[in-house]
Length: 358
Image (tube, rainbow, N blue to C red):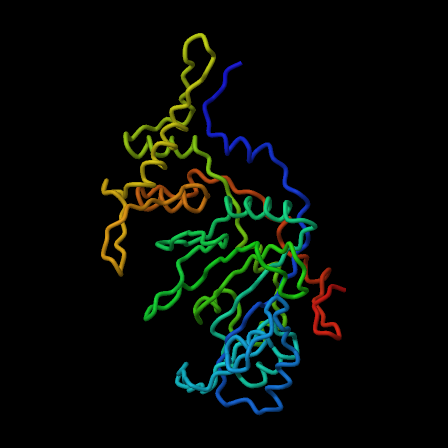
């Protein structure tokens, strides 16, 4: 029997079975809205009463207004103004985990929502199952229209774009994944948090969130069906595409050579893909070594892009070769990670402001 050379991690991913995926809690983690008039104390208290406090945060001092608002569930800012479609908005509010009554009050105030964070919380029975699913998602998650954004991991948190720099607007859409904190709704441990951040009006409109009234009847499952994407890299197809781009070859079949009497088969396409990914992890498309300059010391440091995730490989191949991802990606079904349909899981409020399923 002949053996085809391949990397060990890919064989491990095929043979390993994931633990049972719990049905996630879908909710709005954060909403940012602008109001044409300031909220009265009574209405502000009513909105606050329908916002869920962050059960992960410890009690904070009263002078820390922002974090205090995040702990309670509402942050109000009167220091800025915004003009939108010829109208001025004088108050900015941030609602954390709002309920339907708070959303209805926003709609009654004729608010404009310009930022939103939609979240899925998966609660696992133990840490081992949580980390196994986290590593699987980290390796295979992809974001459409990633363009020049940088896929990065910092202290266990996955970002599909770098944090915004002062003076520059953040990216329109960004995925954030982290497994090291408790569930914000229930305070349960062993929680995996998957979050989609929307940061401007155009992206809100694309997500069909044009008015606060849309938030009340929002279909979380429909939203995540279009955006929760998992895929793996078919390195044989990638190598074949690289060979076609370099030589103009129209070959569609495999190119495998058996090495002598050992029965070991060498796959040229897979080997070419591995070499190209490894090379472009250290060198850009012009053959220049990847470097970065430290802003403080002005020292030039060598750097590279780790190609241990599908999104990182897609970014490397697109920037250095221009080969579209559809030529070598294999989609992975993600229905097990999606929230339940709206008719089967109605999100309601309990007395202690805890989210439960009917």
